[in-house]
Image (cartoon, rainbow, N blue to C red; front, side, top):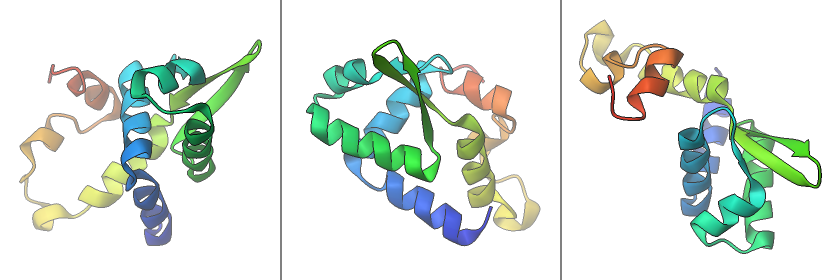
Length: 118
Protein backbone atom coordinates (compact mmCIF):
# COMPACT_ATOMS: atom_id res chain seq x y z
CA UNK A 1 0.00 0.00 0.00
CA UNK A 2 1.25 3.45 -0.90
CA UNK A 3 1.50 6.18 1.74
CA UNK A 4 -0.94 8.42 -0.14
CA UNK A 5 -3.51 5.60 -0.28
CA UNK A 6 -3.12 4.94 3.46
CA UNK A 7 -3.52 8.64 4.20
CA UNK A 8 -6.74 8.72 2.17
CA UNK A 9 -8.15 5.74 4.08
CA UNK A 10 -7.17 7.19 7.44
CA UNK A 11 -8.69 10.56 6.50
CA UNK A 12 -11.97 8.82 5.66
CA UNK A 13 -11.94 7.08 9.04
CA UNK A 14 -10.98 10.34 10.76
CA UNK A 15 -14.61 11.47 10.92
CA UNK A 16 -16.63 10.23 13.90
CA UNK A 17 -19.69 9.21 11.86
CA UNK A 18 -17.70 7.41 9.17
CA UNK A 19 -15.67 5.58 11.79
CA UNK A 20 -18.90 4.51 13.51
CA UNK A 21 -20.34 3.27 10.20
CA UNK A 22 -17.17 1.36 9.39
CA UNK A 23 -16.95 -0.24 12.85
CA UNK A 24 -20.61 -1.29 12.64
CA UNK A 25 -20.00 -2.91 9.25
CA UNK A 26 -16.85 -4.66 10.49
CA UNK A 27 -18.83 -6.08 13.40
CA UNK A 28 -21.68 -7.13 11.09
CA UNK A 29 -19.42 -9.47 9.16
CA UNK A 30 -19.38 -10.29 5.45
CA UNK A 31 -23.18 -10.33 5.16
CA UNK A 32 -23.31 -6.61 6.00
CA UNK A 33 -26.30 -4.42 6.84
CA UNK A 34 -28.84 -2.51 4.75
CA UNK A 35 -28.43 1.27 4.72
CA UNK A 36 -31.67 1.99 6.59
CA UNK A 37 -30.60 -0.26 9.48
CA UNK A 38 -27.22 1.51 9.65
CA UNK A 39 -29.01 4.85 9.90
CA UNK A 40 -31.34 3.59 12.61
CA UNK A 41 -28.56 2.04 14.71
CA UNK A 42 -26.36 5.13 14.50
CA UNK A 43 -29.09 7.77 14.52
CA UNK A 44 -27.97 9.32 11.24
CA UNK A 45 -30.43 11.03 8.88
CA UNK A 46 -30.63 9.45 5.40
CA UNK A 47 -28.89 12.29 3.54
CA UNK A 48 -26.00 12.40 6.02
CA UNK A 49 -25.65 8.62 6.01
CA UNK A 50 -25.67 8.55 2.21
CA UNK A 51 -22.84 11.11 2.12
CA UNK A 52 -20.71 9.06 4.55
CA UNK A 53 -21.44 5.74 2.82
CA UNK A 54 -20.45 7.26 -0.53
CA UNK A 55 -17.18 8.54 0.93
CA UNK A 56 -16.29 5.16 2.50
CA UNK A 57 -17.19 3.39 -0.75
CA UNK A 58 -15.14 5.80 -2.85
CA UNK A 59 -11.95 5.09 -0.86
CA UNK A 60 -12.61 1.32 -0.90
CA UNK A 61 -13.31 0.67 2.79
CA UNK A 62 -16.86 -0.58 2.20
CA UNK A 63 -18.88 -2.03 -0.65
CA UNK A 64 -22.59 -1.80 -1.40
CA UNK A 65 -24.68 -4.30 -3.32
CA UNK A 66 -28.23 -3.84 -4.47
CA UNK A 67 -30.87 -6.15 -3.05
CA UNK A 68 -34.30 -5.44 -4.44
CA UNK A 69 -34.86 -1.78 -3.52
CA UNK A 70 -32.28 -1.74 -0.72
CA UNK A 71 -28.51 -1.45 -0.70
CA UNK A 72 -26.63 -3.78 1.63
CA UNK A 73 -23.22 -2.52 2.73
CA UNK A 74 -20.31 -4.55 4.05
CA UNK A 75 -16.75 -3.79 5.09
CA UNK A 76 -13.94 -4.48 2.63
CA UNK A 77 -11.82 -6.68 4.91
CA UNK A 78 -8.98 -6.92 2.39
CA UNK A 79 -8.58 -3.13 2.37
CA UNK A 80 -8.73 -3.03 6.16
CA UNK A 81 -6.12 -5.77 6.34
CA UNK A 82 -3.81 -3.91 3.93
CA UNK A 83 -4.13 -0.74 6.03
CA UNK A 84 -3.34 -2.59 9.25
CA UNK A 85 -0.36 -4.26 7.59
CA UNK A 86 0.87 -0.88 6.31
CA UNK A 87 0.57 0.69 9.78
CA UNK A 88 2.38 -2.14 11.55
CA UNK A 89 5.02 -2.98 8.92
CA UNK A 90 8.52 -2.99 10.42
CA UNK A 91 7.12 -2.00 13.79
CA UNK A 92 9.76 -1.84 16.53
CA UNK A 93 12.45 -3.05 14.11
CA UNK A 94 10.77 -6.42 13.70
CA UNK A 95 10.38 -7.15 17.42
CA UNK A 96 7.07 -8.46 18.71
CA UNK A 97 5.80 -5.41 20.57
CA UNK A 98 2.09 -5.45 19.79
CA UNK A 99 0.57 -8.40 21.65
CA UNK A 100 -2.98 -7.71 20.47
CA UNK A 101 -1.83 -7.57 16.83
CA UNK A 102 0.30 -10.70 17.18
CA UNK A 103 -2.74 -12.73 18.22
CA UNK A 104 -4.56 -11.44 15.13
CA UNK A 105 -1.82 -11.65 12.51
CA UNK A 106 -4.01 -13.06 9.75
CA UNK A 107 -7.39 -12.02 8.35
CA UNK A 108 -9.07 -15.12 9.81
CA UNK A 109 -7.56 -14.51 13.25
CA UNK A 110 -8.46 -10.78 13.11
CA UNK A 111 -12.08 -11.65 12.46
CA UNK A 112 -12.09 -13.99 15.45
CA UNK A 113 -10.33 -11.41 17.65
CA UNK A 114 -13.04 -8.86 16.91
CA UNK A 115 -15.48 -10.83 19.02
CA UNK A 116 -13.10 -11.14 21.97
CA UNK A 117 -11.75 -14.61 21.19
CA UNK A 118 -8.03 -14.73 20.32
